[in-house]
Length: 210
Length: 210
DNA sequence: GTCTATATACCGATAGAC
DNA sequence: GTCTATCGGTATATAGAC
Image (cartoon, rainbow over all chains, first blue to last red; front, side, top):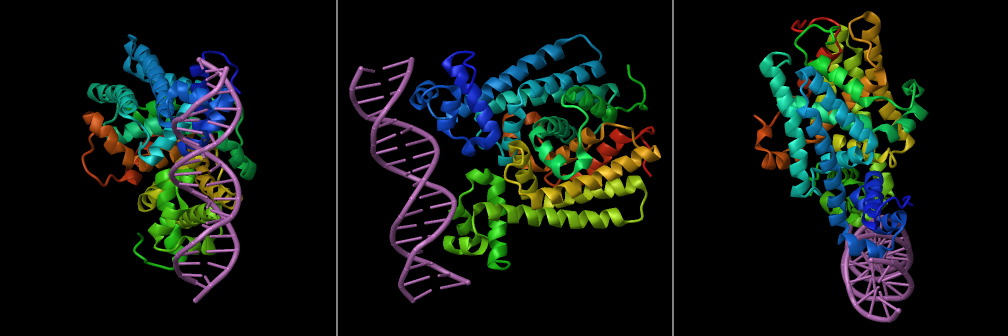
């Protein structure tokens, strides 16, 4: 049950987001979404139309939220490396505060984006373009190696998504392979990734941080 | 319809693998798996028991196959960097020749491994352990930076999976964002990843390749 | 081992009273 | 806007003849 923090529609979107993340589109049950949102099933249909429209509304909200945060990060007057760091850690923070999103997106990656309607894909593409422009700027200025842009780009996005989405699976892995214990709960995904990727992209010798 | 290349059971596993990859566990229909395998639905149940057992059989087969290939790569008498390259490209080749596998695994990552039975998780953990041992060996010998092992490790696996799984989605992204066109079809994921990751992990200056 | 026909349950969606 | 009751379709799984 959602804490009833907002309007009925917001509660429905919140409940749907978590269930789509846990079980996927086909696995999520409309009855349970309604129950968890604290509303009647008929009310859910009254507010959102149908299951697919509900799914689209969830994705649209998430993508627009991330896009807005990224625009702020990109607009800052920092060096390229600092902006890259900021963008990656913005994505990291976003994925940590919206843990449903990476899980939903990973499923979309797996299914080929079957359930993503154009309005969602467009937002996703705009986010990809932001990262891409940073990569290209780095290559032009000589700060980044000229790696295959698409592959690099997918690696950046993919590693971010997986690092965040994989948290629930980790406990099951640790239970079987104790080698994979983790020191603390709150790992700073953004900080790790920006370091790791900047190092991997850099043309300069490692060890120097601006 | 499967080309009827093997036993009924093999055909069923092949058909199930592709449908689980396309639609996920909940989205895949037993009727369609049977149809695509060219067998009757009752025959499918006769051979594999039920849907969950079928899913486990598919994953078990895939994981054991990858594990076997990796053991060969690890056993070679090469330098650490060469072995790392070999392991990553072995994973890349495997994921390209079994394109269903990364898609299925990505969904498992998203769901927290709900459908993975112990026999599958154990194989998965053994594969993780192989990569981990390479990372640790590199840190001990001073060839690799001392990054957070778990995070690095997930980045390696995650980037591999996403790079391979994302192919079907790419065309939809390209359709909307023409910036993301790709030069050719057959990208060598293994070669790209091993280069990218070795560079990212290396303590030495870039530019030198053994 | 192979098939047809069917049991059983569940899910998405709606009708219609209030 | 909110609810109960329910429809129609479809899913997994099995019974039982051959």
